[in-house]
Length: 143
Image (cartoon, rainbow, N blue to C red; front, side, top):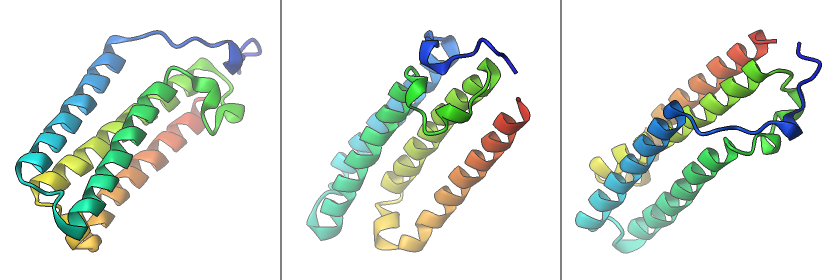
């Protein structure tokens, strides 16, 4: 445990890994929006729900990446005791953001299947849950 670690004083610099992950997520979001617009998936009642959902998830993805540079606002910031835990938390946020981007892109490619058949939402949610639990375990072990 690092006695000098204060999350309020930590500044997270830009890294190659972070830039690559941000670029991947943005590219996936752009592809998703282009597919959804080209296939006219925002038409009708389910289309409006898809539009609202896609806009909300796009904002959430951007928020996840912005939060990586402001670690004091992480929900578990009070439990982070060292830099290794913080770096794992940042990586977790970035991976989950990419998973969300993949989820909405898959939905657009499959013709908004998650809105038409809500049971399809379980697969990406299970994957995101597994990712969260894995990173939680790694963060806990990085004491």
